Length: 203
Image 1 (cartoon, rainbow, N blue to C red):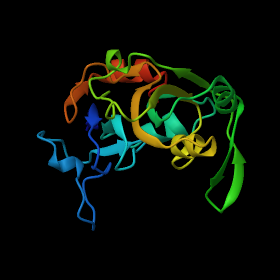
Image 2: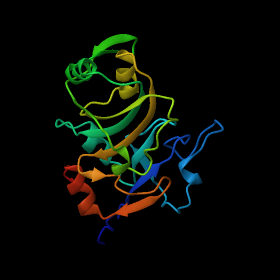
Image 3: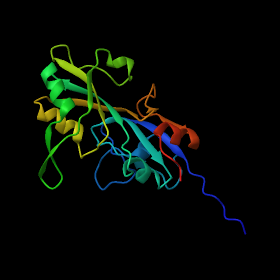
């Protein structure tokens, strides 16, 4: 008797703020199940975003994707659009690019790996979620590209250089882009396209 092959499904969503990256919680929080979409059984989030963060989130029924994407020998880049209070100087950009010391799990100091950091003058061209704070508040928009993912790393990096993170939007993972997906919207991705854009092999 021929074994039936499991057909996995792959989705991206534009996660809005004040929503956790899960379907069940003991806390009174926004859940993925609150989105206006009928997800298949066995769906789960990959590379979670905290409740305050926004943007690109992967959901799949394929249990191998987390290992392939985040635990493999080759690191995969993630790009975040970050709004910080006050203007960011060239000296601060250099600090962020070369590595800053943050506190990580186990209450130990960790120096972040070199990364790409750029000032973005027109964030609205990147995502529809890029709204500004009131005019009397000075802000800078940055893109920060990471190939590592310590807990709350971007927020901790920004804090380490004496800026406050007001918005954090993940806009891409490798070549898988948030694009013009509306906040709260869901898009299904065909399997071969999904693995090609993420630059991972489907074992």
